[in-house]
Image (cartoon, rainbow, N blue to C red; front, side, top):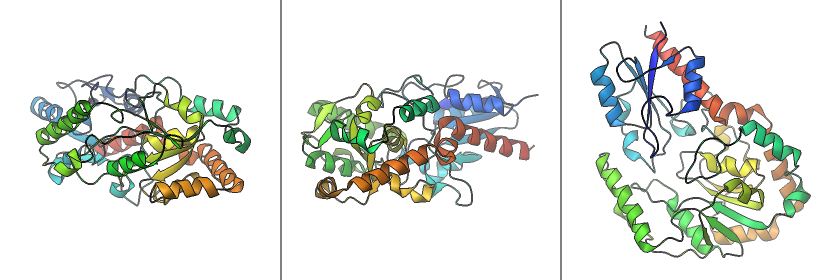
Length: 354
């Protein structure tokens, strides 16, 4: 008899049961599992720690139980789920895109990258990643001559988030967003140009979530820079890929120094050379040449813009093109393959205990 597995999510539109994470559900079915409910499942997968689903599952399932945690939110967003007392509640934990917390003896478990148009409101996947890559290569967007005709110099697509912990890169985002002029930077995302009241509401929501999850927040991290202005802010973006396809560079500042997420890959698949601040790319088997690294401040970015040569641009674009066409990208970082690896490891864990 097939083992039944229950999935639960914590995202705003997430829920418990079928439909929580279709790519992972498909991978589990391929492994021979069935999708169950709280009453008939032998295993639970929480996509980020969900105290309620774990409690209900443990109380209702009378047979041998297995629980797994997939930590999709970085510590900067959901720090309490990284506490040892939380991690110990699960048979096994997975850290996609976080090489620092993965076993160094194993292959990199990449971030489950999906093609979505709107980062603030991701919906159903509009197009297969492989199909989109075929499209951009057919259009030769990685040719330097095509690249040089792009309208935008630098684009940053990210929310003006805050964190309950000081282990984040959000303040650095704000420093660059405030320092670069609108003729250099096009800044898209929520909370950059919104009212003081909306910014305050966001910070209070993060405060409440932190307290409810049992984490004592860093108030300076939460309320610092409140009300600061950002001249380059344009507003939210409907389709980030359209913007990035018309950008020479993309300022990619990750959530933290632990997690590599979708922001880097959004830039790469659109041929926008990343100016990157985040975890060491080489440690995650990503060629360093796909991005410009080591920038310290806005002046260093302006210096790069003024001195970068045609040869250097060509090298970056060629490295990006080669990486996207290699197994190191789709095999490691596409959502379908990331979730297949997680499903396979779950299968091994359960079957070895039987």
